[in-house]
Image 1 (spheres, rainbow, N blue to C red):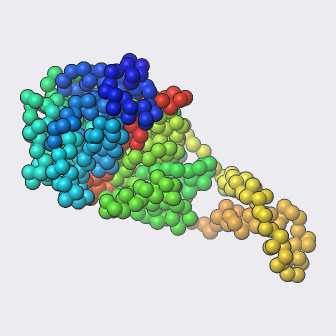
Image 2: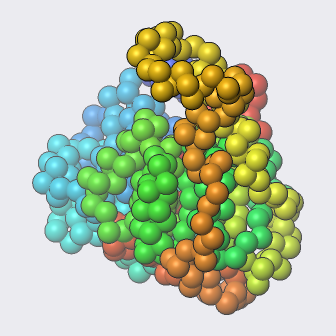
Image 3: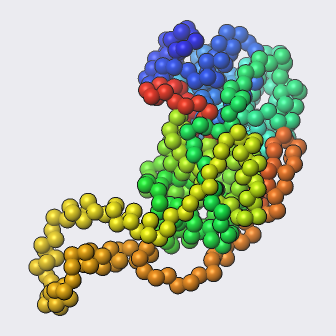
Length: 500
């Protein structure tokens, strides 16, 4: 099927899809929708986040919902509150002409609002495992009439420590009258075990098995000492035409210290980590979406599930220890066929890891060349030429110049005068710097690399240390998952993809 119109969707749902500007399904939608629309079946869908999985399960789910029946008919489990909110938002858009909405329930928000929504008889609940269990134990969430359970980003839920919670929820699902749809970017041992234990003769599809990363992302690595990394990051930011990106660190401490350092250098920066409250996170994310903040410093866990468009750069302060983390990190950029840059800071002792990443991701990473001081100076000077020429009120400044100014300028050329003012405006580029021994923070950022299977089927190839949950205050309400889109978008942009 090449268009949504060929799928015989209900008129209200088709109207919603068209109002969102989509006409053509992405590969996972093209394969999953005929299976899920046509029959009651358990299902396993393997594809990266960003390829359209949310619509792949939301569209057939909405066709299953009985609008006249109150109570929970479908439950969608997500690893993080951000992803839960995003999925609920997409269902609301698709279901707006069907009068169907989703209720998000997650840690860090009011129980009373969630209980009120459940009492109103909401048919679709989207939640994080911990908060879902809380409501089940309180008796406020009943699964008696459930006909569809969806596991979104199943591999991420397991890697974040939700294995026990998943088992408890899956065991409570009415087996005879419900179907389970499992969506995941990878199929490690633990994900396969869940599928084998709880799914019955599932239909299975797998998209883009030969590609792990988007083919529109360019990857570069820069060999540097640990103590030089903050200065290297400043050079990479300054060299970009319009930096709008995410910088990943391994620990909350490093996130805080790097954020403070970059703020002191004059950059518009904020951070995400597990010590921030939900309100603080939401304010930070809104500022980032509005581009009042041009860069976010994040831990892996805190950044999972971020819903941000057009991220131009992802910087890895150090290489993560797990391949999946690397794929999810750089999948924040180069979405829906757009170009993006993934920049990796690598210490000499970890340079060998680059070949391992290239091998398992089937991609090539180029060695980057840091811009020189002269390069950055030329870029900044060129950027202000039009603004300089556009000054309309320069005569007012001339009129207030005293004889001291006239005496100072009389023997100077136009180039010298301009040069002196540029030095005043960009002292960090043109003035001599004091010798520095580097920065003390982050000295222990990287641990000795390990390569093993961690029991969940996730390949480790070494890299930075730190607790993989360091960005989350608890596993029941930690931040959410992501990955990269695998398909180059069409020129018209008509492909229906997850907009994370």
